[in-house]
Image (cartoon, rainbow, N blue to C red):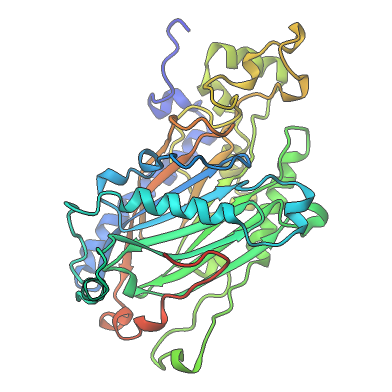
Length: 418
């Protein structure tokens, strides 16, 4: 590849100068105020580290020995909340799309996530400074070893699956958990495409995570379908609070947000399916030369973010990693590395690599600490992506999350809490 540099080079080597670069530099400069916000309100806020990951697993059943520890950075022991978003945990055939929503695949993936997070139970550094010990005492009474992380909520819609985990000592401050599913696939309603959204209050701050699988395809007009899917998901998703006589809201609590964009901190992640908007022949040459920077100049999602439109107000960290799609199974070779003209593969599958798997966010009080691809997983034609955020949470009312925590953790969807 001659002098072509690795895609982890500086922003100036990734994106061309001009409107797009100027726009993204302006967005990056806005992050600087987050740390000062925490300092100004030190007595009224607490900062947590939130891990968000997405992976399209291509309908492949995970092997029993699949270790998700590298993707989840489980040995780092530095995260407070984990949000994992998977797509295509089952094949998107008619039987699964129209059939029952319960899936053993979701149970399997949730088990693997729990195994990765809790494998190093002994010797972990405790960060649950506000833990009153209730969980530990309960575990001792039942002869069980306390798990550092517990599943807060998990939800599935056909192939889309979201699982949220919190530190055991933190979970009592996670309240008003809810989930909402919006299908955007066949007929604009079926769940082969769409989003599963989960929301919760952490202390006095509301979080919403939107796991999307948008319209696929690299033809003219397909990007507009993806934009329409995103707008439809943001418009149609509604959260309704589940209340019981024993879990009535306290009179001093503020009304809960019902729409995605009403939440304080929002993360949108998943297989957004955006491709490279350029001539196929030219794209093929750039792929063979490994010139990712020139491909990123024509990335549909970066162009959409620069222009506003369906993603007005959203942010994305710098894309400094290699394309996440499309790979041969159990291989690091792109599908386009095969010469279809020589009979090396199906011409329909000769797709230019793309950054389909992305993580966006919006809302003040969040700063992205890292954004990267994990290349060690080859069971899918996609590669997993992860991002880490420092999130400032308000201790509304001097710690609103403490007094009403009993009603905060509930079981939603089709996967029981661990």
